[in-house]
Length: 133
Image 1 (cartoon, one colour):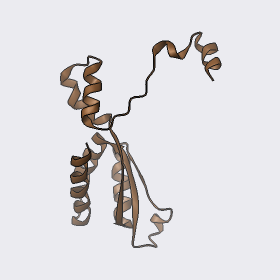
Image 2 (image 1 turned 90 degrees about the horizontal axis):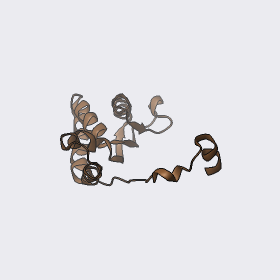
Image 3 (image 1 turned 180 degrees about the vertical axis):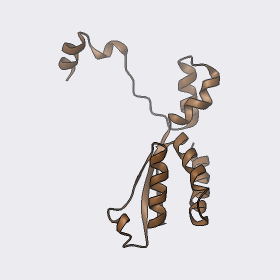
Image 4 (image 1 turned 60 degrees about the horizontal axis):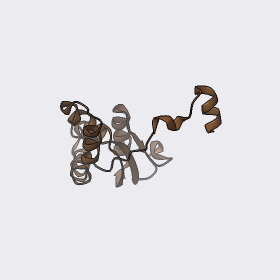
């Protein structure tokens, strides 16, 4: 693989010392942004976009799962739902919600506009996001 890259670009990829940076928290992201000398005013804007979370939500009514999926897709995230969700054969299921802290904030705001059952999920999501970011 390195040889193909060398041939295409004429040099080793390692010349640029590419690193994988895992952002476990907003603080990690803020520190990484500071470390490279970004404008301090940009830190609150960029850091929530650098922390990714996958959250499993259990006992979700399937109609609600569809709404959550559509709302998360609209902000650039993803929601994995059971295969037969759109057939509405089961009453409830677990879903996996995947996105950045920024996307979760947008999702929570959208979910709060829906009916009370989804608003309760939004509040639970907001609570857990406060604890894990």
